[in-house]
Length: 353
Image 1 (cartoon, rainbow, N blue to C red):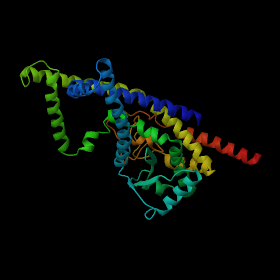
Image 2 (cartoon, rainbow, N blue to C red):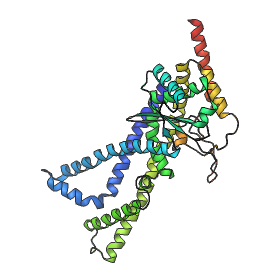
Image 3 (cartoon, rainbow, N blue to C red):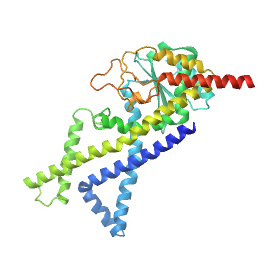
Image 4 (tube, one colour):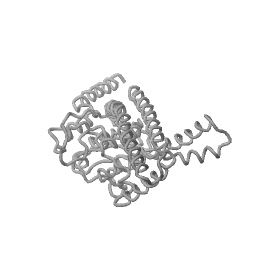
């Protein structure tokens, strides 16, 4: 548990540093277009010089950083649910599932999370953490494949992610990798259809107008337009490169955290239920043989990095990229071996008492 806590702390510190770098880079890149706002703020301040510049950067970076972190959690949780077509369900629709989660949450001294179900036939589950609470998502395939103690063991595993708070950290950590990989497109998701193109044209028009403060050519002239296009292209290109650079360390620490959190959740679930063999049986049942739809690409980002088993909810394997073994989850055989060690420890404790 101390290993998990240490890795969570390092991951959070890194995420905060990366978010600061992303926001600061965006502010620098947008400086040419923010000049009118900066000048307006500077004239309203009772002091000038270096103090005014510092006040300007603080006024930009602090609210932008808070908004960026909040938006990451809110957007990532909503997008993750949408990606697997999960819907929140109540106890009247899934009474047995709710009873199991309520009972296990009470044993773990947890506020029961929301429960969502996806119609996917692939058996899997994951937990999403946000500032407003947690959600446990299970597939119909999981509910069909498991029952009794094995289903309890998997649900207890997801509750341990909530209790350890690694669900929130991983939800936050999955945003930048998914954005860089093209799995997330916030503009298209928030402004579907033609509205995003209208928004893009409006933003481009405003940027063109604001460029008059930094470009020396006559406004509207060919040289002005070419200067604007060059400035815009450099901004987009540098922004894309910077995003890739910032994402790389998040992926590395995220994978390390993903492995540690799975071991910790397995151990916590075994201790909560008092039945490590049930989780071993669930792992053997779900991971036995070659699963149809297993995508063995390096699958840290998005849903696959959050799941109980790393193949996600896909019904068909993706073949549009080089197939390499995923490193976001520990091997099932290693998880089973550690659970058997937990079982021996529990048996020794019971025999000594």
